[in-house]
Length: 479
Image (cartoon, rainbow, N blue to C red; front, top):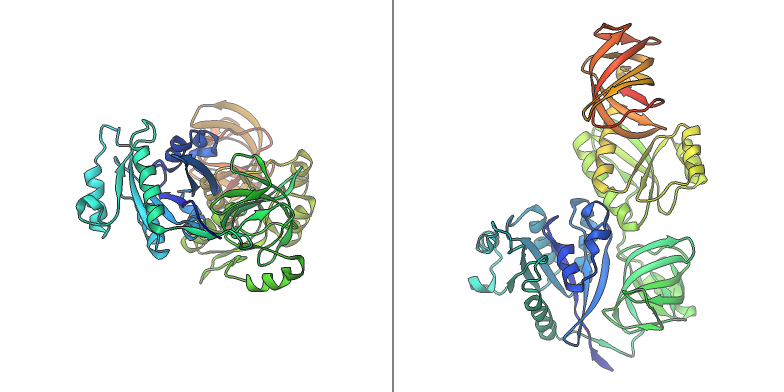
């Protein structure tokens, strides 16, 4: 039986233009306050009911590293909301979002946000859109636009009315008798619950007890939860759902289908699709080759890191080999692999158990650890700088004492254990083999006398220009 299907809506726009705030205002769930660093770092789907009509929203991250996640959101959605801040106008990721919307033939609504600001200029936004070939209805085009304020709850009902109207025009429907299918949005491991897949249903129904498969991972559904974490027995089209029962982690962006046990392998072959996991990121005339073991909280985070590595590769002429990229905590096996392959470890948005942390130190492995994506980017660049300059034998210092510190300057005592150090040398600060920051040597002393250089095996005093704290036991790599 053919039934009406609620619209699936994806929110696009430049970073900080208010995508998550807008969704937060619509569903009143304080999403922004829960996000590390103030940006959405995973794909999330939410379902609301407005005037007896259901709408599913997919919130996609705006930071440039998450291009793959935004592509995925465009692929899944029926309607797009393009959020543009009224005080800032069209920005690079606005144009990127428009390209995704066009490439996926998505009907869309322009939401001009932050109209409550004193410097808001909605007409300037419309002018900028017209200059790149996007004409809103007010300017004689066919793209609806609405002025909104996420913080002041202005125009939200107008936006929701437009979504419902557009959904009716699109005549969205599904076959109630079909076996369920949809897309994997995200997957992760829970220590207590096992493999969990965040998904969205696009046709048919999925139920507890169904056999489910993607192109390479299958299983039997044990539990289902809706967008609010409530246990449910079945999920219908356009519904975001958490699925428990996959044998391993399915990949974000994959199609899933409900099938019979005997047809699983057949469906896997049919779904053997376009998902491409890049393990090597190379560049012509590479000046450095870096091996990496990467552990992340979500598969989408790995896509974001790969995108960052690709950009860094081009800029700094460095090739990366991801020896292992996986979701979940760092294990002893990961450390063994890192040691065997001479790999650096990237740990993103995961806690490191004390036992593992001690083993990292004992094995003298270099760790990049952070829960904010652009912080990882900066630390990778710092690592490249230190590696590229190792051939110059500039030096390494062990910090033995702390004498004085201000917000921007630290006075320390140390011993040059390798090479030498000079005034104006730049340093990478390592703590327990983990990069914690960078700085610059602005003064050197031996026995309270100012000097320009200190050689290997000598004690010295250093004044370092850095905003990072330095502790006894830290190492300073001279680059």
